[in-house]
Length: 444
Image (cartoon, rainbow, N blue to C red; front, top):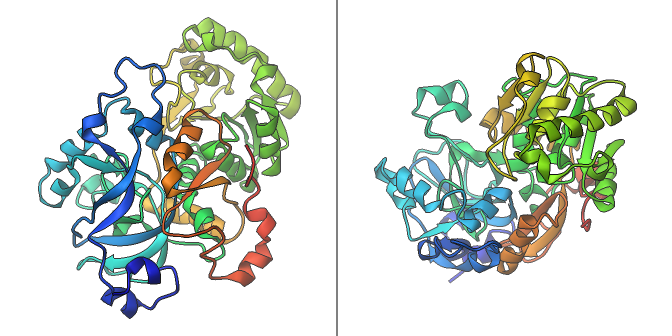
C-alpha cells in the first residue's frame, strides 16, 4: 500500500492524496502528563529530559479542520515553556479546553504534541471546509480562534476562547502531521523551501501586529524603534519590518556574533548591551533601571538624534523598567512576552507624567498574518532561519533556544527528508535572490 508520506511531498494530485489512507499513528515531539512534576526543585530544567519523540495516534478530524502533512516546523519559546512545565503545565490548558465538550474533548490526552509553526501540504479537509483542498501548500498561523465568539469577528485575537495552537491546544506542528482549523491556513510562499517557510508565521506575525497593525504601535516612516533581542526570532523580524516601513531600527544584542547577524539584515545601528552596562539588578531595582536607561538613552540620541518613538519589548522583567524609561514622551512600549519573567518592576512616574503608553500584543489575527505573509511573497522580508535539525533531534534544537544560544529561528525537518525542497516558483526565487532568503543561515 502506498504511504501518505511517500507521495505528499512529491507533487501528488488532489485525487491521489485523497485516496491514500492516513496512517493510524505518526511521529511527533510530545510531552507526557506523568512528567509534569519532574522539574520541581530543579534549577536547570533541561528540556531534553522532558521532550520526547515517538508515535502518537492520529486524531479524528472536525468539520472545520484540515490535516496537514508537516514538511518542516520550528522551535519557539512557547515550546520551551511547555517542556519546562512553566509557568504551569500546559496539560491544564488541555483540560480547560476539553470542558467545552464536543470536538474539544479530543485535546485532553495524556500526551501533548507541541509546536506552533508548520509548513506542509493539506492531505484531508473536514466537511465544512470550503477554501482549501488536498494538495495545497500552506503555512499555519498559531492563532486558534473560535469563530462563534462575537469578539472574534472584530479581531480574532480578542475572543476569550482564542488559544495558541500547539501550546494551549494539542496536535501541534513539531510532528509529521498536524490537525488545525481552516482559519489558521495561509498560502505558503512559492519561492521558499519548506524550512524557510516554516520559521516565519508565529514570530513574523507577532512582530507585524506589534509594529505595523492598527492594533499595535502603528509605526510610521521615520520612527526610531528600539528592538530588544534583535538577533532572536522575534527581534530579527522586527528589524526587517521597521526597515521595510521606513523606520529606523536600533538593535540591542548580546555579542559580536549577534551584532553581525543583525547587520546582515540591514540594521545600521547596533548596540551591544555591554555598552550601557545592562545588569541583573535592573529587574528588581527601578532606580537601577532608570540609571541604565539614562546611559542607553544617551547612546541612542547620539546615533539617531532623538529618543525612541517605540520600544519593541518581549524580554520582560530584565528590561521592562528600562523600556518604560527610555521611550520618548508620548511614546509606546509594545510587549508580547516576558522570557525573563512576568513580574515587572518600573518607576511609574515616567509612564504617567510623560504620557507614555504600554500596549499588550499577542500573536496576530488572520488578516495580519496574510498581510505579513504577502511581504515574504514579495521578497521584502526574509526568513530568519539560522539552523536546521531533524525531528529526531528536536530536543537538542529546543535546548539551543532555551539557553539562548541561537540566532534568528531554528527549523525542524519533519516529513521533508532534506533541506532545499518545497520550492514551486524557481523563477521568483532567482529574481529575489537565494542569497537574500536566508541571511542568517549558519549563524550562531
